[in-house]
Image 1 (spheres, rainbow, N blue to C red):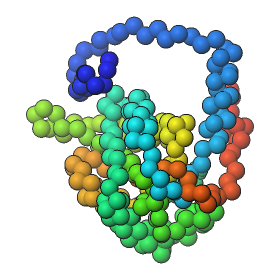
Image 2 (cartoon, rainbow, N blue to C red):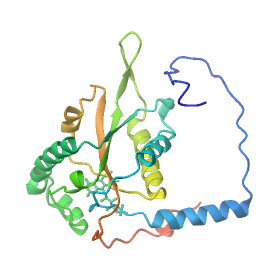
Image 3 (tube, rainbow, N blue to C red):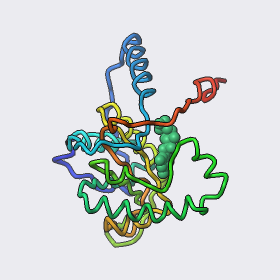
Image 4 (cartoon, rainbow, N blue to C red):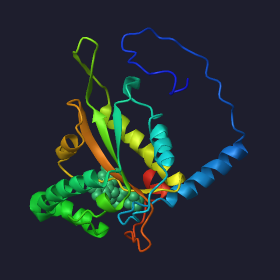
Length: 233
Ligand SMILES: Cc1cc2nc3c(=O)[nH]c(=O)nc-3n(C[C@H](O)[C@H](O)[C@H](O)COP(=O)(O)O)c2cc1C
């Protein structure tokens, strides 16, 4: 199905209509080569907080969003909206509002335990990435949808679905050569206002996208080993 020619509509209440699914099976050697390559590439991904202002190819961002939108979702409700913000004035307004919230957070609202968790990351209330990065993707969760009769209909597993989609977005951006940051200023209500989003949408994250600045630094982090994150029974 081509997304350009066929428009998705909610399938709520419709009968089960199966179609054949017969993807080619990859030979094991090819699978292994791909998984090893992917593992190495993904280990190179880092959250970037210092961006170059250089523009990024629009199509790469759109392709990454299209990849994210292939994510599985509860009852296939695809409860996500991605707002691409390139306008410098809108980015400036988002930064000002985010910094207002973040100042309150870093000045005490977070509490000592949270601040201690953030200390090794070197973050503070100044959010230059929101204006330095040439593009922001603001991700919204659709908490519910409106049926044809105007009644609110529930979306299922919204947090999980949008989290998975954002993971796929980050993977796509990284493998396409772009850097990103998942930024979650708290609370995020100002994003709905700044971007005129409808009532059923709640901001999930702001994702600045671009190339790392020439003098970009990242915290010296160590990831858990496979043994630490996986167990077999
Ligand atoms: C849900 C979520 C929220 C995050 N919020 C912020 C944030 O508000 N500001 C920030 O600088 N980094 C934020 N991060 C980025 C993490 O700090 C980062 O992923 C972590 O330190 C590991 O670094 P790495 O991505 O380079 O492996 C967030 C990440 C996630 C997954």
